[in-house]
Amino acid sequence: MTAFLELDGLSVRLGRREVLRDLRGTLAGRSIGLLGPNGAGKTTLLHTLLGFFPPSSGTARLAGLDVVKESREVKRAVGYMPENDAFIAGISGVRYVAMLAELSGLPGAEALERAHEALFAVGLGEVRYRTLETYSLGMKQLAKLAQAIAHGPRVLFLDEPTNGLDPPGRQRMLRLIREIREAGEIRVILSSHLLRDVEECCDQVLILREGRVAALCDLEEERRANRRLVELEASGGEGDFAEALAGIGCTVAPGIRRRVKVVLPEGIGPRELYRLAGEKGVQLRHLAYQRDSLEEIFQRAMEVET
Amino acid sequence: MTVRARTFRPFTGTPTSPLARLLVLPRYAWREAFKAKAVTGVFTAAFFGPVGALVIVWLKHNLPALARTPLAAGLPFPIDARFFGFLLLGQSYFAFALTIFVGPSLVSPDLVNGALPLYLSRPLSKWQYVAGKLLVLALLLSAITWAPLLLVFLLEASLSDASWILANAPIAGAIVAASMLLVLFLSLVSMAMSAWVRNRAAARALIFAVVVVPAAFGRALNSILNVEWGRLFDLGASWGRVLEGLFGIPLHGRLPLDGAWVSLLVVSALSLFLIHRKLRAFEVVR
Image 1: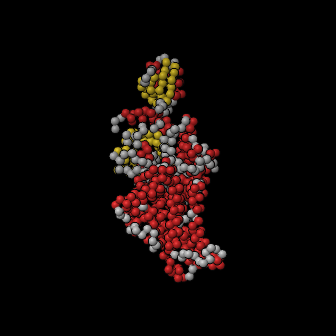
Image 2: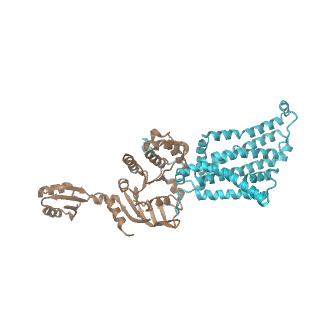
Image 3: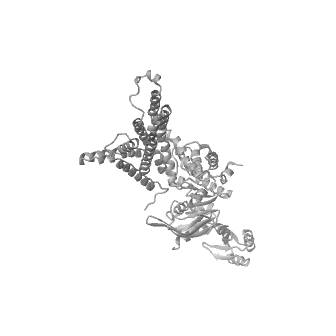
């Protein structure tokens, strides 16, 4: 996969504070998550990529474009959904989206057509003629998403897209983001402090901590690796069962509360484990793939001194 | 193809030109501006003067019609630089009123509603955004200053003989130059004030105060120090003096012309500085 976001010693100083420090990394995922606690520098990184803040040193390239030298081309390629309220007073949803699409370079008729489409796509088709002030918080978030996709960007920047949404609203937003990602035309960079959001929508994650890269991981790879790692709880003849597992090539490590962690070799799956347990007369009380991998990665990243 | 499938498709057509994108802002803002009845009222009232001037010019050249009016003996004043100067001076009051109504609604709502990141995340620079917003007022004020006055001038020129045109040709330039200066000055001040206070009502009060308060301060200085240059703080007087200089008519003769220019340019430069400082995608907390 070709590099999509390249950070080479990127530092950003705002006033006397160095908000981003020597960020380095190459990401190639279809959907990249920026993860970190509040104040880690996620939004500043997005703003720097958008050209709002100049880097104090280093460079960044997005889709092969230098974000400083080719800022205009970057902006043409990006759709941006800001974290905070971002509206144009007194105009309807459809005029809001159409106007911003026109500012992105679309001819008036095309912009209006796409504004209608985008609002239908995010589920605001029925309320598109209402002024934005009358929208609920969830509707405003969706309107912000609509304006970000209406002009057909190659890259979508989503800054805390589920902020302030109730659980159904959050699920709807995440579903939309997944649909956009899976449609394959748009690459997504999602900034969030919510692990679940990133885990559900992203295949690569850049974890920031105090303005530095704390971890960079490929969630797809982690997921593939986790498909080989299961947690087992057996009852009766655990010792024999562990030996039998080792006999078919599994690596067994003790876990907590009588559970063991088992790394499965190629070609061995749960079916074989159940068969083996049956042969040894062992009850399998618990069998689960390793989950919350991102949480563990995040915890590790937050613990490591940088 | 479904709506959704179309939505996620990239735009493959030719993007519009930077100028076309710039004009998007005034196009949308104009429609919003005229939603306010006060704006429509002032804008309409602003045409009474030029329409009256057109009637006067026409009557002057249609003596049989003039004979049926109280002005049967002819017009008591000539159609010259003084006529156009006073006409523009009158229009400048309407321009100021329109600026107070329209100016603050251009930038303040964008700042309050966090719309600036939406604009600036597109291929539109901050100064293009400023130019687009300035164009809203510039076009609006042009419609009540140089555009109708040039129409009056052209009517007079078309009805007069060549000698009038030769003698008064510079008036056309003076109309355009003085109007442009007024439009630019009012637009910059209103944008700066609304960017600074971010509140429509407060910005309106501040635009009014920028014109009235320094004028009072200048008069106080004149009285206390027994000087004349205190009037340079009076932006209205400075504008009048510049207009006088351009049209060659006496209005505020006691003010130095250079000083009047400097006072208008200093306030314009300060406004530009304020706009530069205050219009940002995001405030940086230092």
